[in-house]
Image (cartoon, rainbow over all chains, first blue to last red; front, top):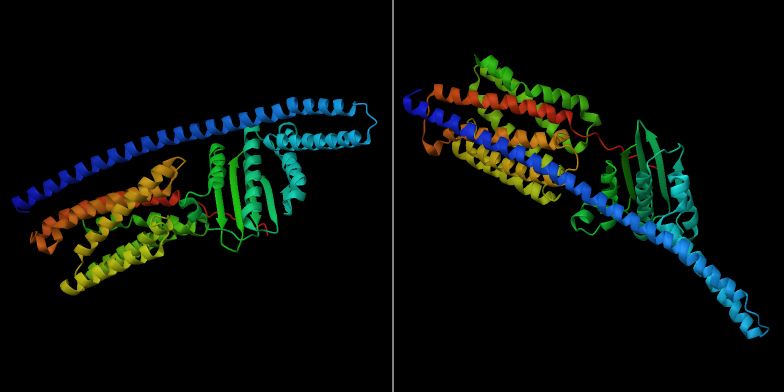
Length: 248
Length: 220
């Protein structure tokens, strides 16, 4: 190499070293920021979910424990009215019927907000109850398969229950399906929640891109909080399948 | 250090290729173009070595030019699979068409048997920009340990290799009229060979972290 080439070669080496150092610094800082942002993101979602669930619990308890007994007392009072007038008796009978309906509706709302079965008997029974209770209203056959006993923390049980609720509602509202299958299984310390419907499907990426899939984002957030993986496969006219995999 | 030593360095891509072939059936199909890219790189390295050993240097340029087009197409396909062009096939086709036309045009001017550094450098810039975009998206969206993400290693590999490639190939651009000596060329090529070794090892790590194919169990 002549002196000019040597000079050029040395300059090239220096440029490479500078570029390498800058690149290394860029990568290290990017990773640090990603970790920080990830931690903050998880904390924020967890806080949002905790607040939401606490509020639901409180409203459910208020409806069930305060309004329920009050309405029962009102019903008792009305039924104790002494009258022989047939018109009054009819009004008392009707009012008593309305109060019964309100009490039933209150119980349903309270149960939707925070199912007692979920807290007392666990996820499997809560999902069975949720499907049984809504089968008539939904007019969508839902098949639930779970052959193992599930031992999960209450937070995870609540999140999984909400995911099942959301998917069932989505299927009912948008899928135009005639069947929904929900399956839960545990393999190698990992829980798999799989659902599939035979509805009209949708374009998952355009839904996410257009920012219109709030329900989908909720599903993702709840899965993330549990440290799991969320996957949605949907093709127009070929149905939708969700797979949620979480560590047990 | 002779040519065989540097050939062995560049053959280090074989680790990524072997791992890729072993994991091929079980990996997410979005990463298949990357495995093809590793395998084709191995074949090209061997072919070029054989051509040089057999005194058929005049064919090396043609091999590299064809490889340049295939390599660019596979990596752009990889970015497309990752959703970088908002999954618009028209963008993917337009980029490739531009690359092919650029290469064909410059080859027509300079001759088909010479390595087309101008087109390669333009392609390298495009790949670096796409890698940086993919890297930024990943930083923003990834919710797990970034070191266990194949995209991270692939993007870093592409950025390092093609930056180095641009820096060491610039002197070969004919319009700069640098006319370097063979000894200088050889020294510069050595730098590229070491960068290649580093990147090939990064690619091998990337293949290890390529996610498994999603097991969609059809419940129907």
